[in-house]
Amino acid sequence: MPIKFGTDGWRAVISEEFTFENVRLVSQAIAAYVLAQNPTNPSLVVGYDTRFLSDRYAAEVARVMAGNGIFTWLSRADAPTPAVSYAIVEKQATAGVMITASHNPPRYNGLKLKAAYGGSASPATSAHIEQLIQQQAEEGIQPRLLDLDVALAQNLIKKFDPAWAYYAHLSNLVDLDILSGGELNIVADGMYGSGRGGDWGGVVTRP
View 1 (cartoon, rainbow, N blue to C red):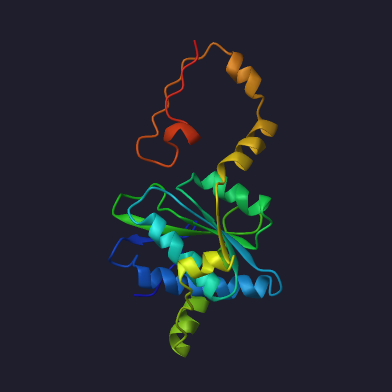
View 2 (view 1 turned 180 degrees about the vertical axis):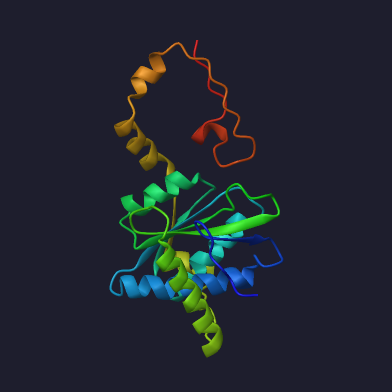
């Protein structure tokens, strides 16, 4: 089955079409795209959400990038998509990948390709990635992989926390003192998403 990008990336059912093998194939096409965009100093930011195996899929993306000589910032834990998008700009990366199926049902996972400006890749870029995947299949090109621990030791992959740079960015956009001083009672339930917990949110109350 051909891999097709839809609105804001590629999504498919886990273990049917969304497999480790296919994630590697897509990652190899993205690596070719990144190298064409920046052949001298290519880099990528990779993040992921709390979906089943998202951390493993993200690691596979990073391994393929390392196998192609592309430096990768890999989120050390699940993170919201906006934080990962901002990290692409903050790190001045060539592009980014977010492993998430967004609003799709739990049996899905997905891969969002982000441009250097942090937003979604254009339809033309997505179509180009599809062409590269097809070209790889026709030419028998297999994903180039590097062991994760080796890539970390060689500094081809660096784990990072996208949270604090994003917090700082938000504080420049929103007057947090006004929000803190307001008479607000807010309950935010992140459930099992990447917005849960003390680092990103959870339950907030203001008297």
